[in-house]
Image 1 (cartoon, rainbow, N blue to C red):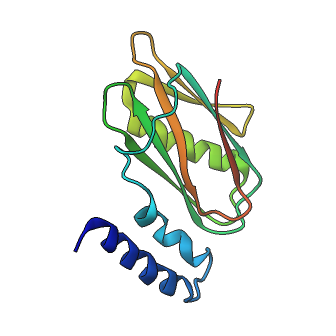
Image 2: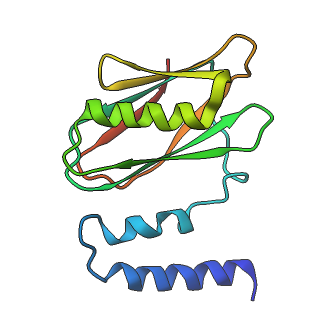
Length: 148
């Protein structure tokens, strides 16, 4: 079976599964990673030295906020931030900062600014990088990703 036929079959199965009820999040959200393109094949946004992640509103459901980070000349990395229902934008920002700092290590600094924003900065001598929002399965939480 060729890859396109496999993807088409998988999509049909997932659409059928999406019709099943999900307790807290939209049913399709749990299958979103399967439908995303391979990270190495996705077009890479322009890199920068600083990125700002802005979190708006409190979580109305449990869920995951997923980011893809590209450091120049390296494979992309994924960072998942688990969120609990009722967490404020400030709590979500702190959770994102912690998850990003753990994944990025010493070459990059992730700090909370203005309570609900996270700014990621390349330390001196570190390569530029790109941040992309992959998915947000948390109801009522909006995430903006911008070069700072």
